[in-house]
Image (tube, rainbow over all chains, first blue to last red; front, side, top):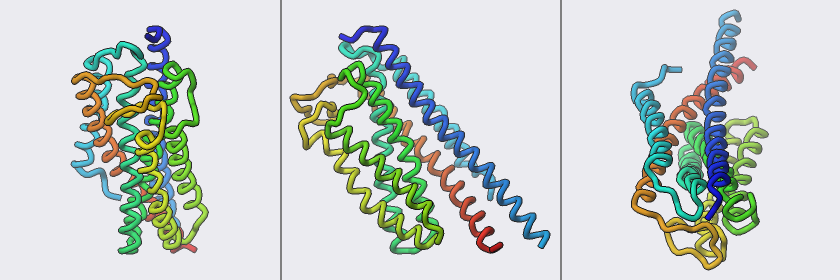
Length: 50
Length: 231
């Protein structure tokens, strides 16, 4: 049987990694969305000036 | 781009609740496994992420086939979406599995059949993302990507079946283990229920992220069209 403290440490590490990767991906979706919205706005302004 | 439809907002809330529910099931409902103790709890999210990831890679191949038939850019966006999200989920499965393996097998990584095929699968689709970016013409890029996902999908059943076909230390969740297996355990009904709940939760989360990523893809397409018109 695995030592309880060691086992708990690896479990916490596992879930920290899972939540971090998932969280970073969701943040990347937000960032890309806002960047694209800004790009679109800029392109529309350029077109309107022309 | 239109604001989020009501169904997507409902899906966002459902995904959040299911995610919290899955965590509660893992930590408060599922019993402790007697040999591996706490670290066994990684198993639930590891399996769910691997399962959803593999299904996503297969979905990308289906989207690729539809693109080759219809030549509609919409299917290229769907295909890219499926690959991107599956890469994230599969990376989580690999990383979580490695952390589980350290106290169970004594090493984070070993080149046994399942881990090797899983690493190849992940790299095949990372290459897909990188190669796509090197093609400027949208039609050529979509055609290349569709064929690539079709060929790449071959690695999905190979990865899935690797623990059933070869002598391996990786445990089999459904089916019989080989004599070399390390870290297998008998699942109680509570463990089984937790596993299926987590599978369901991550399937819903996958659909939610899929929808958001498609909206992002459509917005990117709109920006690309504007840029091409400006040239």
